[in-house]
Amino acid sequence: MQLWQRQYDYIQEYQKLVYDTYANQGTAFLCTYYNINTTTTVWDNDIILGGAYEKIGDLSGIRWNKYLLLPIYFPEEISTIFDATEIGMNKENETSITIPSIYGITPYANDIIKFDQSYLRSTNDIYPIFSVTGIEISANTNKRFWKLKLSVEQSRTLDEIEIQTDDTFVFFDYDKKIHTLNESISLTKFLQKNKLVSDNLVNLFDQNAGWYLF
Image 1 (cartoon, rainbow, N blue to C red):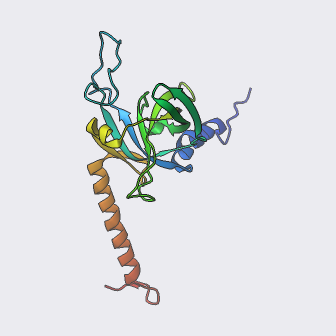
Image 2: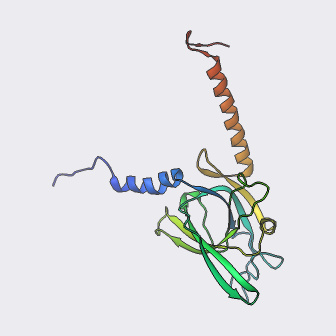
Image 3: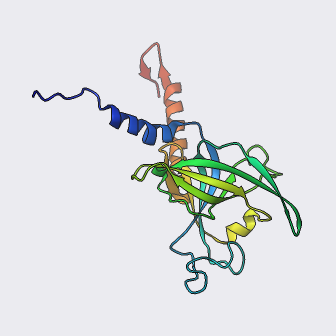
């Protein structure tokens, strides 16, 4: 039989489109993501088999890494559930989001998410923080999408979470990668300098002469 070779690798191109291109270029919402630092977190291994006494507070050994400006995708409609408890009526808000694995972040239950709205309401941020209560994966492969189920974190503030935060990282939109805070500041300064140089060169170019006039 004659060996035939396709001009296009449709399956590979589709996988690249879904897991690389769309994960970078799709419509996204920005959030601050607190991912559990499994290296520095102190777990109890005697009584509750690897869990934590408390998630937040003096008795908690949980530590987080903070990721700023992290894009998330496909936020679902927030459902509201009312529950009568001993302390009164409790309102639970639940939703779900999707993040791609190309970020290099492995989500865990009890991760914290705060949707960034400070540019809209910088002095009165009334938006809640969410806690990850469930995790699903799209496929058991190296490239995947994580679907996270979220519930509103009751009676907690970001100030309490910040006390248990180790390192801060930033999703840098220019190269679509995660960098440390200092690296992101340096990269932003480089971009600003390049923009100034580019604008100056445009102003120095004389279209009639076809030369840059210094």
